[in-house]
Image (tube, rainbow, N blue to C red; front, side, top):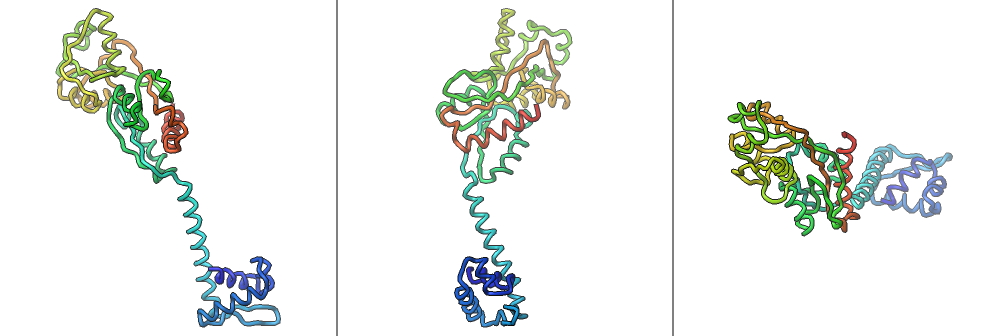
Length: 292
């Protein structure tokens, strides 16, 4: 490669002396490179003239190839440097709602544009389970609804989600005159374990001395949506998910009062300096905070 570099330098400078200055070599060393390259290729590359070194016709053809080879070599070095600086690794990411609600598509698009060698494994779960898994290192990072008071966990507040009650279509006639007492007589879909949504519903019923009957317990929001669609029971859902059900004629929305819940991105505090964690957190926070 050095001989090709010398060949191109002499061709550009038009003289051995000029090329030697460019390459920080002695003129005899430059001449030796050219001689050795001509011997290897069995082709005369230059002819000496009173003006200096003139490239032969064969040399002109080979000069173009030599320049391409040098450029390719530079590209290899540049790519190697980029690979050294790229993040490589795998993270498990707990998600507790639909991809649309969590804005996963634009987040992943941004993440993979900046860090194509980072591999994410998405794990569907509920807030309580995600918190437990983060504490035990079963998950690396995750979305969490509600407050996070554990000092062992780092939480980035992303925003607030609006919540409404999705009522299966078969109970739609009861919604116009509905109150909490009437809703307590209908079947509900509950969460298994800690869930701030569940706490909100329980608190509303408890304020009236009521408790709604639970017919199914599930941590999966997609399953809740499917069960509402099937007419099994009522559920407190993110407004976007409930609107999708209502638009399909599978449910009606009951909104007796404003209900909102905070959403955070959470990971173990001791991993705050982990480059993989930082990369994912940066993409998530950018999308959420830039779009409000």
